Length: 217
Image 1 (cartoon, one colour):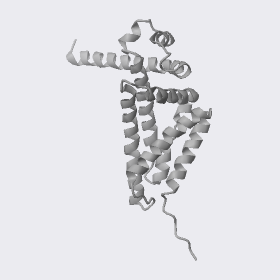
Image 2 (cartoon, one colour; image 1 turned 45 degrees about the horizontal axis):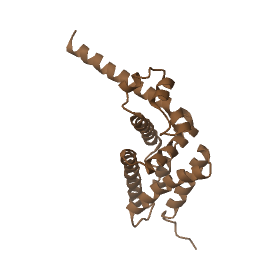
Image 3 (cartoon, rainbow, N blue to C red; image 1 turned 90 degrees about the vertical axis):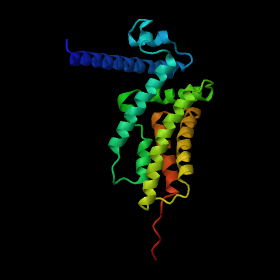
Image 4 (spheres, helix red, strand yellow; image 1 turned 45 degrees about the vertical axis):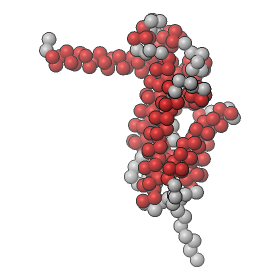
């Protein structure tokens, strides 16, 4: 057996293991959404994924690792869809609104479960004493921050926006997003209602910084 053949076999095993990890992560979403993160057990996840009780530990050390794998998977997919949607001709506002367009969730998952899962994640993060969820969420927010920050600067350069403090506006947009998700939980809003409200709020905010055409006499 040649070295190249062994390498191919090794890579194939790695790919198979990663696919199995993602399958397990997908199978766990309904449990985390319906029961909450703290109340969901590894045994339940293993059963839903169709694997033996002990086998799940070959793929994940604990359920925290599964949660982060879910968000890695969803975030990577969202980034892919976002970059496919935006074009050079779009305004800064249109690009930022697209960043918070989660319509792919409707096509690939149970959208209501993902909304509840995200709300559960926020709740867990707020009482997280280990820093695990907090640090991970900070990483996700930083990705959004970098994209929004760049879009705003592009809007300023094109004369679309007039912003005196890009950092404050960028962070305000992220806070709007987090607040809308929490508000949706308080008001028992579904996915479509939450998405609509998020789009409306962010569009309204950015409209305050959009250069207006001077009135013609």
